[in-house]
Image 1 (cartoon, rainbow, N blue to C red):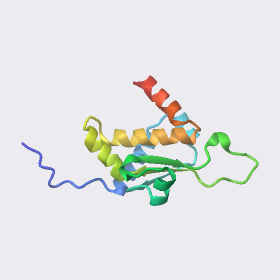
Image 2 (image 1 turned 30 degrees about the vertical axis):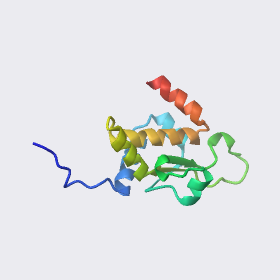
Image 3 (image 1 turned 30 degrees about the horizontal axis):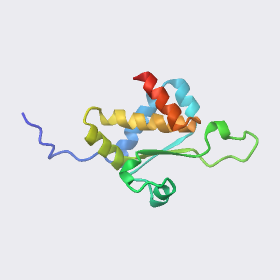
Image 4 (image 1 turned 45 degrees about the horizontal axis):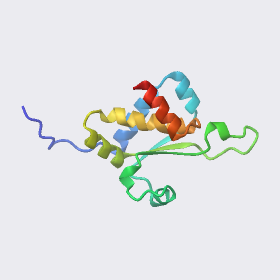
Length: 136
């Protein structure tokens, strides 16, 4: 039997939020505790200001973003920083999933989420990639 996909719809923002929640719930306890009260938000794309700030012309190039003061730079006695937020961008993630074809959508969402939590913990891209390379 051939699957036609005619009866399928692209996962919605709510579907992505559920997948992100499940990915977060599946993380080790210590990692979840370290992430603290980070807010996870799903949007179709980054807004124009974010893309301009990051000097990104193609909105499909940004799958996720951490916004906030990472935990290593917070001042316990100072004013509370704005809430830490992780943005997951649905359309670029879907695009990557379709292009790769070798990994499940939930796995890509989890990967982007973990990457952005790494930024929340104060890791830069090079450190995150080094950790990912160790796991491979």
